[in-house]
Structure formats: structure tokens, C-alpha cells
Image 1 (cartoon, rainbow, N blue to C red):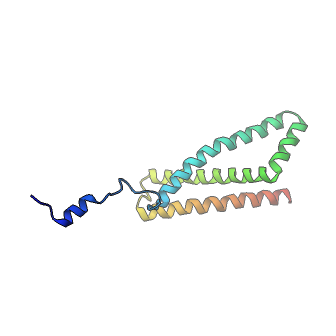
Image 2 (tube, rainbow, N blue to C red):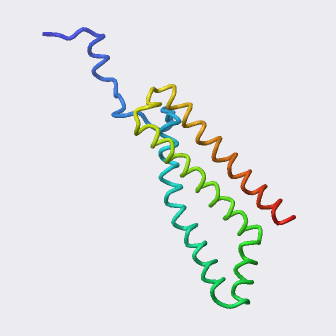
Image 3 (cartoon, rainbow, N blue to C red):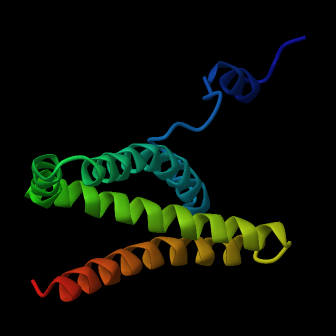
Length: 139
């Protein structure tokens, strides 16, 4: 029994086992889930920075001054800005999951809108916190 030429051609064609990242665009909900996990890990590091600051405040004035100087440098402020964004993003991601736990917002279109809102909200809240902080300092 001979196979037709079209069948033989189809049998020879190698097909990928699964979509590869270069041809597959992850949906926003998947991307936000990954970022939620990353920000959760980053919060461990940021919380250590808060602990260092509290320990410096409880120790001596020179140690506290040095930690304040380090946190006030451009690198320290960049890290603190990233920590603030990670905290806001992780918090809003948690609220998103809380909403989903109620059974609301699970439709594909709605879930995507909520994911985009999480991203936009985290950026907006971070900027507002930093603006309020600079206004409170008078700087």
C-alpha cells in the first residue's frame, strides 16, 4: 500500500513540540503572574533594607547617618524606588487574585484589563508615593 505524495510530504515535516518564546507572545495575565512572583522575591531583599535601616536607627548616630547617606545616594534611591514599585505591584497583584478568588473577572478580556490596570496602578502609586515623599521633605 503506497502513500500519496501529499501524505509522505506531511509525514516528513518536522513540527515543534511546543511553541517557543520567539514565536509565542505570552498573554498579559501570564506576564503579570511572572512579575508578581519576581516582585515577591524582590520584597525579601527590600525588607532586609528596611531591617538594616531600623537596626541603624537603634544603634549609634554615625551608623544611622551612614545608612541614611547610602539610601540617599542615587543608587540607594533607585533601589528604594524599585522596592516601592515592587511593593505596590505585588500588593495590587494580590488584590487582583483576591478578586479572582471571588469568581469575578475571570473572563479572558476582563482578566487582561485587570492585569493592565495592575501594571498602570503600580506605576501610578509608586510615582504618587515618591512625589508625596519629596513634598513632605520640602525637597
